[in-house]
Length: 410
Ligand code: HSE
Image (tube, rainbow, N blue to C red; front, side):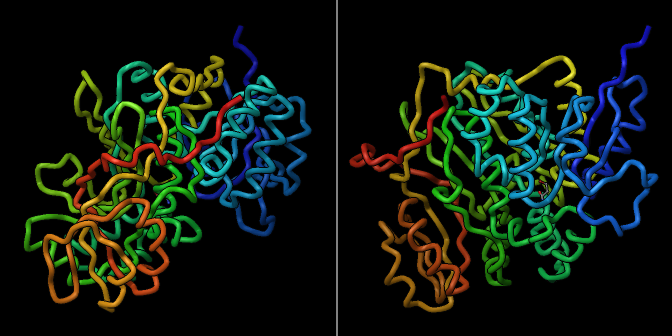
Protein backbone atom coordinates (compact mmCIF):
# COMPACT_ATOMS: atom_id res chain seq x y z
CA UNK A 1 0.00 0.00 0.00
CA UNK A 2 1.33 3.47 -0.86
CA UNK A 3 1.66 5.89 2.05
CA UNK A 4 -0.76 8.81 2.11
CA UNK A 5 0.82 11.86 0.47
CA UNK A 6 1.87 14.66 2.84
CA UNK A 7 0.05 17.93 2.24
CA UNK A 8 1.99 21.09 1.49
CA UNK A 9 0.62 24.56 2.18
CA UNK A 10 2.47 26.96 -0.10
CA UNK A 11 2.81 30.71 0.48
CA UNK A 12 3.65 32.58 -2.73
CA UNK A 13 3.34 31.61 -6.34
CA UNK A 14 5.96 33.81 -7.99
CA UNK A 15 8.94 32.55 -9.94
CA UNK A 16 10.13 30.17 -7.16
CA UNK A 17 6.61 28.99 -6.16
CA UNK A 18 5.80 28.20 -9.79
CA UNK A 19 9.25 26.58 -10.18
CA UNK A 20 8.62 24.33 -7.18
CA UNK A 21 5.18 23.40 -8.49
CA UNK A 22 6.68 22.38 -11.88
CA UNK A 23 9.37 20.32 -10.14
CA UNK A 24 6.86 18.55 -7.87
CA UNK A 25 4.67 17.81 -10.90
CA UNK A 26 7.60 16.15 -12.66
CA UNK A 27 8.87 14.26 -9.59
CA UNK A 28 7.12 10.90 -9.95
CA UNK A 29 6.56 8.94 -6.76
CA UNK A 30 7.26 11.92 -4.50
CA UNK A 31 5.30 11.56 -1.32
CA UNK A 32 4.04 15.14 -0.98
CA UNK A 33 1.73 17.42 -2.94
CA UNK A 34 0.61 21.03 -2.82
CA UNK A 35 -2.91 21.25 -1.43
CA UNK A 36 -3.34 25.00 -0.88
CA UNK A 37 -1.54 28.12 -2.14
CA UNK A 38 -1.89 31.44 -0.35
CA UNK A 39 -1.21 34.45 -2.57
CA UNK A 40 -1.40 38.21 -2.12
CA UNK A 41 -3.02 39.24 -5.36
CA UNK A 42 -6.20 37.33 -6.23
CA UNK A 43 -6.61 39.17 -9.55
CA UNK A 44 -3.38 37.95 -11.13
CA UNK A 45 -3.79 35.30 -13.82
CA UNK A 46 -2.56 31.89 -12.55
CA UNK A 47 -1.55 28.66 -14.23
CA UNK A 48 -3.61 26.50 -11.84
CA UNK A 49 -7.36 26.24 -11.14
CA UNK A 50 -8.80 28.84 -8.74
CA UNK A 51 -9.63 26.26 -6.01
CA UNK A 52 -5.91 25.94 -5.22
CA UNK A 53 -5.68 29.59 -4.19
CA UNK A 54 -6.65 31.64 -1.18
CA UNK A 55 -5.65 35.08 0.12
CA UNK A 56 -6.14 34.07 3.77
CA UNK A 57 -2.99 32.83 5.54
CA UNK A 58 -5.15 31.01 8.09
CA UNK A 59 -6.34 28.64 5.36
CA UNK A 60 -2.89 27.07 5.70
CA UNK A 61 -1.83 28.02 9.23
CA UNK A 62 -5.04 26.76 10.86
CA UNK A 63 -5.49 23.67 8.68
CA UNK A 64 -4.47 20.64 10.78
CA UNK A 65 -4.32 18.42 7.67
CA UNK A 66 -1.40 20.48 6.27
CA UNK A 67 1.88 18.87 7.31
CA UNK A 68 4.40 21.16 5.67
CA UNK A 69 4.38 24.93 5.27
CA UNK A 70 6.53 26.22 2.41
CA UNK A 71 7.10 29.98 2.53
CA UNK A 72 8.24 31.51 -0.78
CA UNK A 73 7.01 35.08 -0.55
CA UNK A 74 8.90 38.26 -1.15
CA UNK A 75 8.02 40.37 1.86
CA UNK A 76 10.23 39.46 4.83
CA UNK A 77 7.83 41.00 7.41
CA UNK A 78 4.84 38.97 6.19
CA UNK A 79 7.12 35.93 6.00
CA UNK A 80 8.11 36.50 9.65
CA UNK A 81 4.48 36.25 10.73
CA UNK A 82 3.87 33.11 8.64
CA UNK A 83 7.05 31.29 9.67
CA UNK A 84 6.88 32.11 13.40
CA UNK A 85 3.15 31.25 13.61
CA UNK A 86 3.69 27.92 11.85
CA UNK A 87 6.69 27.05 14.06
CA UNK A 88 4.73 27.94 17.20
CA UNK A 89 2.04 25.49 16.15
CA UNK A 90 4.73 22.82 15.74
CA UNK A 91 4.54 22.61 11.93
CA UNK A 92 7.51 21.85 9.73
CA UNK A 93 8.44 24.95 7.75
CA UNK A 94 10.58 25.44 4.67
CA UNK A 95 11.62 28.95 3.67
CA UNK A 96 13.76 30.52 0.96
CA UNK A 97 13.70 33.93 2.61
CA UNK A 98 17.28 34.92 3.37
CA UNK A 99 16.36 38.38 4.71
CA UNK A 100 13.89 36.88 7.18
CA UNK A 101 16.31 34.20 8.36
CA UNK A 102 19.35 36.46 8.65
CA UNK A 103 17.43 39.19 10.50
CA UNK A 104 15.75 36.80 12.98
CA UNK A 105 18.27 33.97 12.98
CA UNK A 106 18.61 33.33 16.71
CA UNK A 107 14.88 33.71 17.37
CA UNK A 108 14.08 31.22 14.60
CA UNK A 109 16.64 28.71 15.86
CA UNK A 110 15.28 29.03 19.38
CA UNK A 111 11.64 28.77 18.23
CA UNK A 112 12.39 25.40 16.65
CA UNK A 113 13.78 24.10 19.90
CA UNK A 114 11.05 25.52 22.09
CA UNK A 115 8.25 24.14 19.90
CA UNK A 116 9.91 20.93 18.76
CA UNK A 117 9.41 22.23 15.23
CA UNK A 118 11.63 22.20 12.16
CA UNK A 119 12.72 25.03 9.87
CA UNK A 120 14.77 24.22 6.77
CA UNK A 121 16.12 26.89 4.40
CA UNK A 122 18.63 25.45 1.93
CA UNK A 123 17.10 27.57 -0.86
CA UNK A 124 17.84 30.78 1.05
CA UNK A 125 21.57 30.63 0.31
CA UNK A 126 22.94 30.21 -3.23
CA UNK A 127 19.78 28.47 -4.52
CA UNK A 128 20.72 25.13 -6.07
CA UNK A 129 24.10 24.82 -4.32
CA UNK A 130 23.56 22.60 -1.25
CA UNK A 131 25.88 24.67 0.92
CA UNK A 132 24.00 24.76 4.23
CA UNK A 133 23.61 21.01 4.56
CA UNK A 134 27.19 20.55 3.36
CA UNK A 135 28.50 22.86 6.10
CA UNK A 136 26.21 21.31 8.69
CA UNK A 137 26.84 17.63 7.84
CA UNK A 138 30.03 17.16 5.80
CA UNK A 139 32.01 19.90 7.55
CA UNK A 140 30.55 19.19 10.97
CA UNK A 141 33.98 18.76 12.54
CA UNK A 142 36.75 19.88 10.24
CA UNK A 143 38.19 23.32 11.00
CA UNK A 144 37.14 25.82 8.37
CA UNK A 145 39.67 28.44 7.30
CA UNK A 146 36.99 30.31 5.38
CA UNK A 147 33.92 30.28 3.18
CA UNK A 148 33.69 32.81 0.39
CA UNK A 149 32.22 33.34 -2.99
CA UNK A 150 29.66 34.79 -5.33
CA UNK A 151 26.36 34.56 -3.48
CA UNK A 152 24.17 36.84 -5.62
CA UNK A 153 23.17 35.80 -9.12
CA UNK A 154 21.77 39.17 -10.25
CA UNK A 155 24.83 41.25 -9.49
CA UNK A 156 27.07 38.56 -10.97
CA UNK A 157 24.90 38.59 -14.11
CA UNK A 158 25.25 42.39 -14.34
CA UNK A 159 29.02 42.33 -13.77
CA UNK A 160 29.43 39.61 -16.42
CA UNK A 161 27.41 41.49 -19.01
CA UNK A 162 29.16 44.82 -18.32
CA UNK A 163 32.71 43.44 -18.21
CA UNK A 164 32.52 40.69 -20.83
CA UNK A 165 30.03 42.10 -23.32
CA UNK A 166 30.23 45.86 -22.73
CA UNK A 167 26.50 46.10 -21.92
CA UNK A 168 25.35 49.19 -20.04
CA UNK A 169 24.77 48.62 -16.31
CA UNK A 170 21.09 49.68 -16.50
CA UNK A 171 20.26 47.27 -19.38
CA UNK A 172 22.05 44.41 -17.64
CA UNK A 173 20.04 45.08 -14.47
CA UNK A 174 16.81 45.16 -16.46
CA UNK A 175 17.69 41.79 -18.05
CA UNK A 176 18.38 40.31 -14.58
CA UNK A 177 14.94 41.55 -13.49
CA UNK A 178 13.19 40.26 -16.63
CA UNK A 179 14.84 36.84 -16.19
CA UNK A 180 13.42 36.59 -12.66
CA UNK A 181 16.80 36.62 -10.88
CA UNK A 182 16.50 39.97 -9.10
CA UNK A 183 14.67 40.75 -5.88
CA UNK A 184 11.58 42.94 -6.27
CA UNK A 185 13.75 45.67 -4.76
CA UNK A 186 16.93 45.17 -6.81
CA UNK A 187 18.85 47.48 -4.45
CA UNK A 188 19.08 44.41 -2.21
CA UNK A 189 20.99 42.59 -4.98
CA UNK A 190 23.27 45.32 -6.29
CA UNK A 191 23.85 46.86 -2.84
CA UNK A 192 25.27 43.58 -1.53
CA UNK A 193 22.48 43.12 1.05
CA UNK A 194 21.15 39.86 -0.40
CA UNK A 195 24.70 38.42 -0.41
CA UNK A 196 25.15 39.65 3.16
CA UNK A 197 21.98 37.90 4.41
CA UNK A 198 23.28 34.67 2.84
CA UNK A 199 26.72 35.25 4.39
CA UNK A 200 25.16 35.71 7.85
CA UNK A 201 23.31 32.39 7.45
CA UNK A 202 26.41 30.62 6.15
CA UNK A 203 28.46 32.05 9.05
CA UNK A 204 25.98 30.56 11.53
CA UNK A 205 26.43 27.13 9.96
CA UNK A 206 30.21 27.49 9.48
CA UNK A 207 31.27 28.91 12.83
CA UNK A 208 28.23 28.88 15.13
CA UNK A 209 28.30 32.69 15.18
CA UNK A 210 24.94 34.43 14.74
CA UNK A 211 25.22 38.08 13.76
CA UNK A 212 22.97 41.05 13.20
CA UNK A 213 23.26 41.83 9.45
CA UNK A 214 23.45 45.56 10.31
CA UNK A 215 26.76 44.85 12.04
CA UNK A 216 28.31 43.36 8.88
CA UNK A 217 29.90 45.57 6.20
CA UNK A 218 28.48 45.36 2.69
CA UNK A 219 29.33 47.52 -0.29
CA UNK A 220 27.64 47.02 -3.62
CA UNK A 221 28.23 47.48 -7.32
CA UNK A 222 25.92 50.45 -8.02
CA UNK A 223 28.75 52.95 -8.44
CA UNK A 224 30.79 50.82 -10.87
CA UNK A 225 32.25 53.05 -13.60
CA UNK A 226 34.07 52.47 -16.87
CA UNK A 227 37.26 53.63 -15.11
CA UNK A 228 36.94 50.80 -12.56
CA UNK A 229 36.34 48.20 -15.27
CA UNK A 230 39.37 49.55 -17.15
CA UNK A 231 41.56 49.51 -14.02
CA UNK A 232 40.72 45.83 -13.51
CA UNK A 233 41.01 44.89 -17.20
CA UNK A 234 44.45 46.51 -17.55
CA UNK A 235 45.66 44.25 -14.73
CA UNK A 236 44.00 41.12 -16.15
CA UNK A 237 41.48 41.05 -13.29
CA UNK A 238 37.70 40.83 -13.12
CA UNK A 239 35.50 42.55 -10.56
CA UNK A 240 33.09 40.20 -8.76
CA UNK A 241 30.80 40.82 -5.79
CA UNK A 242 32.32 38.54 -3.15
CA UNK A 243 31.02 37.59 0.28
CA UNK A 244 33.58 36.14 2.63
CA UNK A 245 33.91 34.88 6.14
CA UNK A 246 37.28 33.71 7.39
CA UNK A 247 39.02 32.62 10.50
CA UNK A 248 41.34 35.38 11.70
CA UNK A 249 42.91 33.36 14.51
CA UNK A 250 41.88 30.53 16.82
CA UNK A 251 39.14 32.56 18.48
CA UNK A 252 37.98 35.09 15.88
CA UNK A 253 36.32 35.32 12.51
CA UNK A 254 35.79 38.27 10.22
CA UNK A 255 33.27 38.79 7.42
CA UNK A 256 32.14 41.30 4.79
CA UNK A 257 30.68 41.68 1.30
CA UNK A 258 32.43 43.89 -1.25
CA UNK A 259 33.30 43.95 -4.91
CA UNK A 260 36.61 42.12 -5.20
CA UNK A 261 39.36 41.86 -7.82
CA UNK A 262 39.55 38.28 -8.99
CA UNK A 263 42.52 36.92 -10.93
CA UNK A 264 42.43 34.12 -13.55
CA UNK A 265 43.94 31.76 -10.92
CA UNK A 266 40.90 32.17 -8.68
CA UNK A 267 38.11 29.59 -8.59
CA UNK A 268 35.66 32.45 -9.01
CA UNK A 269 37.13 33.96 -12.20
CA UNK A 270 34.95 31.92 -14.54
CA UNK A 271 31.79 31.99 -12.42
CA UNK A 272 29.63 34.11 -14.70
CA UNK A 273 26.06 35.32 -15.16
CA UNK A 274 23.50 34.03 -12.65
CA UNK A 275 25.83 31.29 -11.45
CA UNK A 276 27.12 31.29 -7.88
CA UNK A 277 30.38 29.81 -6.66
CA UNK A 278 31.18 29.01 -3.05
CA UNK A 279 34.74 28.23 -2.04
CA UNK A 280 35.16 26.32 1.21
CA UNK A 281 38.67 26.15 2.63
CA UNK A 282 39.15 23.61 5.36
CA UNK A 283 42.10 22.24 7.29
CA UNK A 284 42.36 18.86 5.55
CA UNK A 285 40.05 18.79 2.53
CA UNK A 286 41.71 22.10 1.50
CA UNK A 287 40.03 24.26 -1.13
CA UNK A 288 36.75 23.13 -2.71
CA UNK A 289 34.50 25.01 -5.12
CA UNK A 290 30.74 24.48 -5.17
CA UNK A 291 29.31 25.84 -8.39
CA UNK A 292 25.76 26.13 -9.65
CA UNK A 293 22.83 28.34 -10.49
CA UNK A 294 22.25 30.83 -7.70
CA UNK A 295 18.96 32.32 -8.86
CA UNK A 296 15.87 31.50 -10.89
CA UNK A 297 12.63 29.60 -10.29
CA UNK A 298 13.80 26.07 -11.08
CA UNK A 299 17.26 26.12 -9.40
CA UNK A 300 15.74 27.65 -6.25
CA UNK A 301 12.72 25.31 -6.46
CA UNK A 302 15.14 22.37 -6.60
CA UNK A 303 16.62 23.37 -3.21
CA UNK A 304 13.09 23.69 -1.78
CA UNK A 305 12.25 20.22 -3.13
CA UNK A 306 15.35 18.84 -1.43
CA UNK A 307 14.26 20.42 1.87
CA UNK A 308 10.74 18.96 1.51
CA UNK A 309 12.31 15.58 0.88
CA UNK A 310 14.63 15.99 3.90
CA UNK A 311 11.66 17.03 6.05
CA UNK A 312 9.84 13.84 5.03
CA UNK A 313 12.56 11.82 6.76
CA UNK A 314 12.54 14.20 9.77
CA UNK A 315 15.83 15.91 9.00
CA UNK A 316 16.54 19.03 11.00
CA UNK A 317 19.56 21.26 11.45
CA UNK A 318 21.43 20.53 14.64
CA UNK A 319 23.45 23.77 14.54
CA UNK A 320 26.50 21.66 15.29
CA UNK A 321 29.04 24.49 15.22
CA UNK A 322 27.10 26.41 17.86
CA UNK A 323 27.32 23.36 20.12
CA UNK A 324 31.02 22.79 19.48
CA UNK A 325 33.54 23.41 22.25
CA UNK A 326 35.45 25.56 19.76
CA UNK A 327 33.96 29.04 20.07
CA UNK A 328 34.48 32.02 17.78
CA UNK A 329 33.78 35.72 18.11
CA UNK A 330 33.34 38.27 15.36
CA UNK A 331 36.21 40.73 15.06
CA UNK A 332 36.28 43.92 12.99
CA UNK A 333 39.88 44.45 14.05
CA UNK A 334 41.29 43.42 10.69
CA UNK A 335 42.75 45.45 7.86
CA UNK A 336 41.45 45.08 4.32
CA UNK A 337 43.41 46.10 1.27
CA UNK A 338 41.09 48.11 -0.99
CA UNK A 339 40.98 50.12 -4.20
CA UNK A 340 38.85 53.22 -3.65
CA UNK A 341 37.78 55.34 -6.63
CA UNK A 342 36.12 58.58 -5.56
CA UNK A 343 34.46 61.64 -7.07
CA UNK A 344 35.62 64.13 -4.45
CA UNK A 345 39.13 63.85 -3.10
CA UNK A 346 37.90 65.40 0.17
CA UNK A 347 36.29 62.10 1.22
CA UNK A 348 39.81 60.82 1.92
CA UNK A 349 39.85 63.18 4.92
CA UNK A 350 37.10 61.05 6.48
CA UNK A 351 38.70 57.68 5.79
CA UNK A 352 41.70 56.92 7.94
CA UNK A 353 43.70 54.59 5.71
CA UNK A 354 46.33 52.74 7.70
CA UNK A 355 48.63 52.73 4.64
CA UNK A 356 48.42 53.88 1.01
CA UNK A 357 50.38 51.91 -1.57
CA UNK A 358 49.17 53.39 -4.87
CA UNK A 359 47.67 56.75 -5.79
CA UNK A 360 45.99 57.76 -9.02
CA UNK A 361 44.12 60.86 -10.21
CA UNK A 362 40.86 59.80 -8.56
CA UNK A 363 41.71 56.60 -6.73
CA UNK A 364 43.91 55.17 -4.03
CA UNK A 365 44.90 51.64 -3.07
CA UNK A 366 45.65 51.04 0.56
CA UNK A 367 44.67 49.35 3.79
CA UNK A 368 41.77 50.30 6.00
CA UNK A 369 40.20 48.74 9.08
CA UNK A 370 36.96 46.81 8.61
CA UNK A 371 35.43 48.68 11.56
CA UNK A 372 36.30 51.99 9.83
CA UNK A 373 34.55 50.90 6.65
CA UNK A 374 31.32 50.28 8.59
CA UNK A 375 31.53 53.82 9.97
CA UNK A 376 32.26 55.55 6.66
CA UNK A 377 29.85 53.59 4.49
CA UNK A 378 27.36 56.47 4.13
CA UNK A 379 30.15 58.89 3.20
CA UNK A 380 31.31 56.51 0.48
CA UNK A 381 27.77 56.02 -0.84
CA UNK A 382 27.06 59.76 -0.89
CA UNK A 383 30.20 60.39 -2.92
CA UNK A 384 29.32 57.64 -5.41
CA UNK A 385 32.68 56.08 -4.61
CA UNK A 386 33.46 52.57 -5.79
CA UNK A 387 35.33 50.26 -3.45
CA UNK A 388 36.98 46.99 -4.42
CA UNK A 389 38.74 44.65 -2.03
CA UNK A 390 41.90 42.94 -3.24
CA UNK A 391 40.94 39.97 -1.06
CA UNK A 392 43.85 40.56 1.33
CA UNK A 393 42.78 40.59 4.99
CA UNK A 394 45.28 41.12 7.79
CA UNK A 395 44.70 40.69 11.48
CA UNK A 396 45.55 43.71 13.63
CA UNK A 397 47.68 42.21 16.35
CA UNK A 398 47.11 44.69 19.14
CA UNK A 399 43.38 44.97 19.52
CA UNK A 400 41.65 41.63 19.21
CA UNK A 401 40.07 41.94 22.64
CA UNK A 402 37.62 44.50 21.18
CA UNK A 403 35.23 42.00 19.68
CA UNK A 404 31.50 42.33 19.16
CA UNK A 405 28.98 40.45 21.21
CA UNK A 406 26.89 37.94 19.32
CA UNK A 407 23.48 36.66 20.23
CA UNK A 408 23.33 33.23 21.82
CA UNK A 409 21.10 30.23 21.26
CA UNK A 410 18.96 28.86 24.07
N1 HSE B 1 18.00 37.84 -6.09
C1 HSE B 1 18.72 36.68 -5.72
C2 HSE B 1 19.97 36.57 -6.57
C3 HSE B 1 17.87 35.47 -5.90
O1 HSE B 1 20.06 37.29 -7.57
O2 HSE B 1 20.88 35.81 -6.24
C4 HSE B 1 18.42 34.21 -5.29
O3 HSE B 1 18.57 34.33 -3.90
